Image (cartoon, rainbow, N blue to C red; front, side):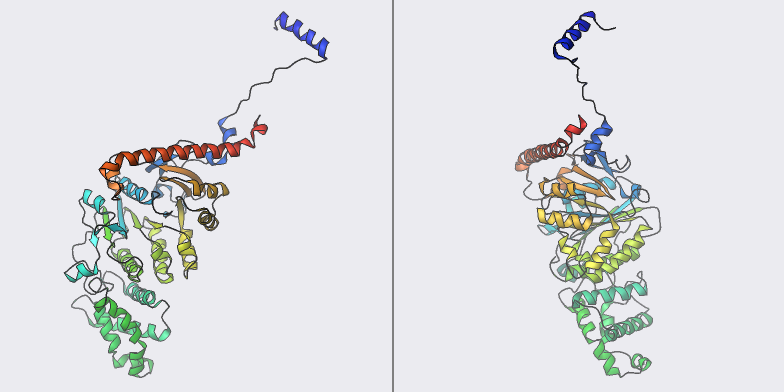
Length: 469
C-alpha cells in the first residue's frame, strides 16, 4: 500500500504540472546481453582438457588448447600455423607448449630447429634439461663421422625414395624434371635397388649409374646409350653436390645407427645450415620423408612435428607436395604439424601459392602475433579473420596473440611460469642483470595491452549504449 504522503504529493504535482512524475527504472543487464553487445567475449571456450596456454584478454578466462582433444569435434585437422614478427613471443609459445605437452606420457615431439646462436640451436637448453642430445646436421661435423641420413634408407619405400630424389633435384634446379631426365633417374634408381643387396644403397651409387647407365636400359626404350647418359647428366651433377659438394657428409652414407626415435623429444639442430641457401629446403625434405617412414607408426602415441622457418617447406612447390602427403597421412596416425612462419606473404606470393594454400587450409588452428597494419590486413584476407581481429593485430604487445581455432577467435595472453622462464627466454639479452628490467617491461606491456583492450571494448560498446538503456 502506498504511503499517504506520497499519494498527496503526486496529486499536488499533477494539479500543478498536469502530469505525474515517474521514477526511471535502473538499467539491468545480463551476461548474455553483454556478450551480444561485444561478440568476441561470447565465443565458447575450447574445453578444460589439454595444455594451458594462458588467459583470454577480454574475458579473463583461462585458455586451454590441445589439438588431439579437439580433433574430430571442434577441429577438422590437428595442424597449427604460428605467425608473427620476431620478438613477439613465438619461440616462448612453442617451447612452453612442447614442455607442457610432454607432461602427457603418450606424447612425442620432433623439432626442426633452424635458429640458434653461439654454435648451438635454440632448443639446446630444453634438450639438455630433458637429458637429450640434439641430432646436429652439420656438413663440417659430418666429415668427422657426424650424423647422416640416407635418402635411400631401406626403411623408406622405393616409391618414397624416388619421390624424395626427384624433390631434391627439383629444388636444387628450381624447376621440375622433364620426361627424359625423370626416366634416367628412374632407371638408375631401379638398377641400384635391384643389384645392391649386401649393404644400404647410397647416393653415390645413383650418381655412378647416371653417369654410366646399363645398355639394357637403353635397349628397353629403343634409344641409344649415349642418349640415356645425356638425359641423366644434369641429374647426376645435382646429386653430386650432396656427395662431393658443399653438402657432402650428411646424406652420402648409410643412416647413422643409434638415433633414438622413441625419445619423448627429438631435436634436429639445423642451425649450422645457411637458412637462406638451397640446402635448407633440401634438408627439410629429406628429414621429413625419413621421419614419415621411420618415426610415424600406427600406435597409440600422439606426435607433434614442429618446424621452425617453415616457409622453406611451404614456399617450395616440390617440398610442399611431400609435406602435403605427410599431413594427410599423419592425421590418421595422430600427428599434429606445427609450422612457424614470420610473414604469410613469405609463402602465399611465391611460386608455390597453390601448394601453400593447400597446407594453410589443413591448419585449422592459426595464432597471429603482432604485425604491421598492411601485413595484418593481408593475413586477415588469406585466413578469413574477422575485421575486429585484423584491426587489433598491429596493436598487440609481446606475449599476446590472436588465436583462431576453426573460427573460434580470441585474444590470448601467453603465460610463462618461473620454472619455464630460464629455458624459454634464451636470448643473450635476457641476462641475470636484466631480468628485473625484463619483468618490469613485461608487466608494463601487459597493463598497456589491457588498457588498449578496454578502450577497444569501450569504442564498440559505446555505440550501443542507448540501445541497451
